[in-house]
Amino acid sequence: MKKILIILICIVIIGCQFPVQKNNLAENVEEHELLGYWRADRHSYFLTTDILKNTKKRVNDSISLRLNKNMVFDFENAVYIENGEIRQKSFSGKWKLVKLDVNGKTLYLVVFEDTPNLPKYLRSGINVYENDATIQLISFMDDPDMGNRLLLKKLN
Image (cartoon, rainbow, N blue to C red; front, side):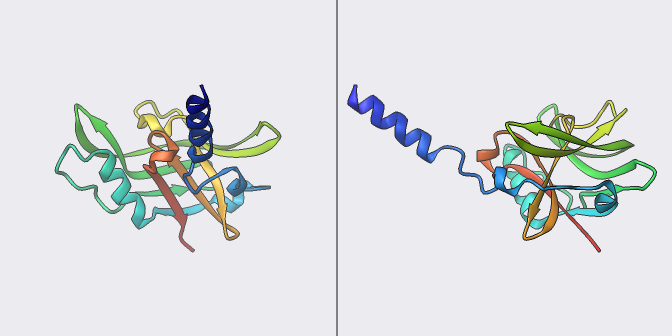
C-alpha cells in the first residue's frame, strides 16, 4: 500500500511539466492587439513533424495566420493528418476573441467560425498566452505534456 501511495505522489509531482502553464495566460487582451500577421516559431516545425513521424514528409515552413480588422482570418499551410499522411492546407473565415473564466483564471481564445474543414486541433480555438510581455498564440495538437504544439508569434 505504501508503494502505491509513493508512486501516486511521484506521478502527481512529475505530471504536467510542459512549460506553458496557467501563469502564462494573457491578461486583458483586446482584439486590436491580435490584428496582424503571425508566423509559427521554428520549434513548431520540429514538433509538428515529430507527431507525424510515421511519415517521411517534412512540414512546409510557411505556417502563418493573418487576423484582419474586419474579423476575417487567413490561415496559410495549417498542418493536419489525412489518411495517415501529412497535409497542409490554407483556410479563411471569420474569427473572434472569446474570454472564458476557468477556475478563477481568465482564458482568452481566438476562435475560428464558419470553417468546416479546419484541422481538429484548431476547432476549439487557439489559446492566447503571454511570454515576457509578448502575446503568443498556442494550439496543442494532443496532450500538452507531449509538447506537440503550434506556437505563433506576431511579426511587427
